[in-house]
Length: 398
Image 1 (cartoon, rainbow, N blue to C red):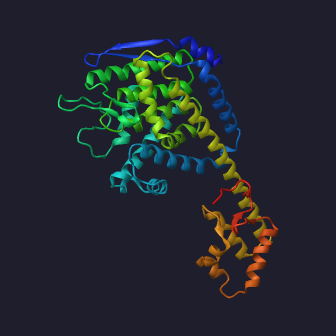
Image 2 (cartoon, one colour):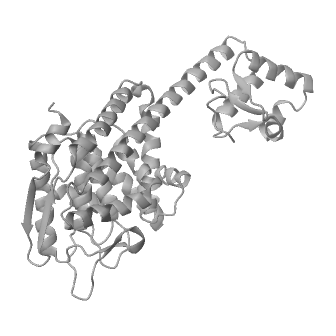
Image 3 (tube, rainbow, N blue to C red):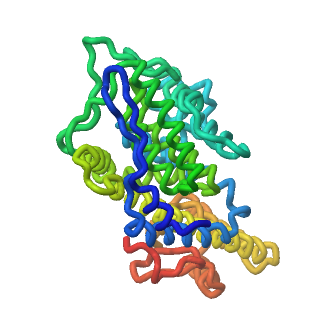
């Protein structure tokens, strides 16, 4: 593969200028500084290589479920969605045909759009095309109420309605193209420009956020543009071999939402002022998000595998009668909780009280001592119980 810094710098001034009927000239350019981006780009690749060697096949189903829920929560929240992450997961577990509430529909629609994107990205030779963008938008906005939006149909503003993007708090407002012909022209140009980047071997880690950026500048639909832009970015990354992280990236954007919005406007203004390498800040932001997202996923895989191995160990000890039924229940209850429980909390739990309803305190103490002796539970200085695979040095400080 060619050196990334050489590739980027050799094409940094490459431009494609489009004349539209009413919006005026619109220029697509790479606009990045290879010397600045190359070290971070390599760190993302290194993180991805480590992630690929982790035992993904053992945890694929659980990881996929978690990433989808977290990502949909993230990308939906960026656009004002009110569902919590837990509520998002609950909605995704429902039969889509039974979902009627608008907030729930937004989450379900995003899951459909993710499926569309993932299926396309896995097809050999898949390339970004305008009908695909429209299909993603249709999936995202189907059955949602909006006075003007039609799923999969580009905007064509009447004279009485002006579309604006952004706000003063995040760098100012911007008026994208208003007329359907200009939008259609620019979306076709975006696809052609992206294909040119592919042919010049510009990596997806650079191409994907640039498509995201220019798509949002065009802002082709009445509703759902932010969600569509993030799905397009994820599809391009997944088609290049990145797993899970492309969709997990939405959570990073939510966590840094002010920077996310500010950078769109900063890059747009810098390009208008002919600043050298105007897109470098946004691509750097994207690369840092990918690095963090991949490392988080790696840590999550390691934790899931630890839990699976721990569960296997506990089951073996139970089958070998080295654990009694009460001890086995305590371990499984600890694993089922997302937070550690104090000894006092556990003793108030109905399931725990039922275990020892007719037994003495000495029996309770012997059971706990045995679990600690086998290394199946640990107790921290706050008398919180943790499953044995958790290192107290790395446990969260509650």
